[in-house]
Image (cartoon, rainbow, N blue to C red; front, side, top):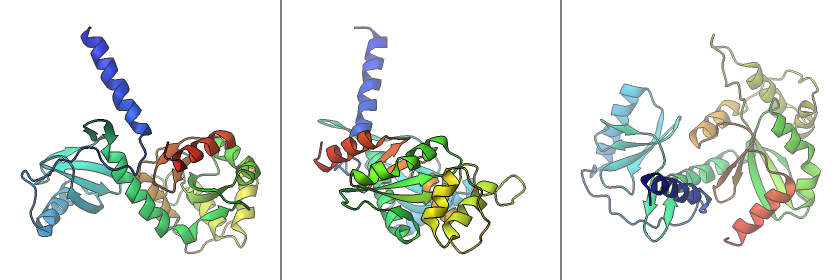
Length: 264
């Protein structure tokens, strides 16, 4: 058996771990007791060190399942650091025991669940009459696959899938001159509309967006997306915190949701 074959096999195993349910319990139970801060004040020192040196906006620092490593949730995503904040890693952490589990995805799933609860009152919702499933989707009106998904809204709803939208301006919140981007202003106008559902549907069909300004957390929703790993739209979050990147047609999405619900 060649080294090339062994490396390929290892890569396939790790790739398959992404299909593990996001809220599954970690299969690796390593007690993280080596060189980790013993008090919350020491975690604060790690936070302060990374904030000062890298300019991160850090939401939390806690022990990771790996000895000597802490998990850092930032506005730029999830990172791992040494216990004193002198070293930083960006990537996925896997637990390897009887099976392979994606520990990074499990942590991000919990952050997604908390974020969906936080923004639940600020979503644009297209409810199913006979609701079986709920998905939360980061969307933008300039995204072709977002438009395609929205065109099939009746089909999603007829299959019992309620679709909730969060705003994610793909062009970012501000341009290079520090001004609000057109994408941000368009989404803000839609969310501020007296009938956001209708406004979003018209915008995704190509209609112009009438300018409106109000206090809606468009920037916060965008930052939440960046934090939990959104790199493009649509990005679909399930109620268990699992995220499915990219467009899924109604039949495929229903099949996925049914499978997850049944614990498959």
